[in-house]
Image (cartoon, rainbow, N blue to C red):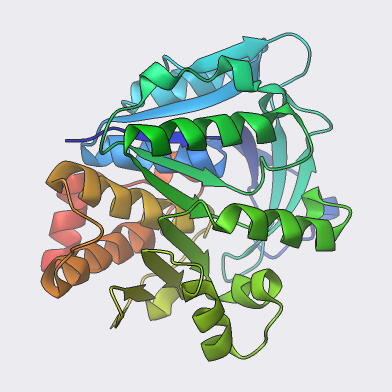
Length: 319
């Protein structure tokens, strides 16, 4: 089994008690651990993998809470830094009736943005290890250089790089700059996971087929396009595979994409999958499993607290 590392933000999601209410009118919220990289690490750990979160939290009660949550679900917390120079990030979420979300972030700056490249140690990583990152922490702050240092170290160690842009437009004043930064980091990814509604923003092309060909021209080894309840499309080794999703009653879509890629990386790590030489049968099994985990995550509010155990996933898939 290889190790899964995620780097970036861990934060507090404040989930509204009411659906279909504009954020300004929400009366009460439920606190939940979140942040896409933290969610991915938690998914892998809960399913039975070995994962570690790399990031920085504030010396505050919310930081304490996040460390406790990650530790309790089995995520390695050895590489979490703490600081008193900024607070732990917060995100307030409003939910539509269909479970989709709008965000308001308190992060200017937050502790996660202050992770330094000098705080990344090359000795953490070994051959076959996986590093996963997203775009929220690619802002013009020390954490961007920390990402570059970690990516370089993992590549030199013979590891795998996974990138999920996980676009959050409210965090960037200049959306063109945001797009350019994402495109700069696409070249590092062995595995690229994006949702279908992000393709046009990233590529600037509104024809999905042409956009996909452009992404594949970057020599990404695995391109995964998630389509919510409609499943996923995968492109690898000159193959294209479409795997249907699962129909469930949706409570909250927060963390569903993270649960998908966390499950996928978990499967790679526990089976020591060679991503350059994966069989169609293995790919279909991995995608079906990941779809199931993502679907189950949407049936509860929150992200980490909604991730199902491996037993629950197996039971769900056997129905």
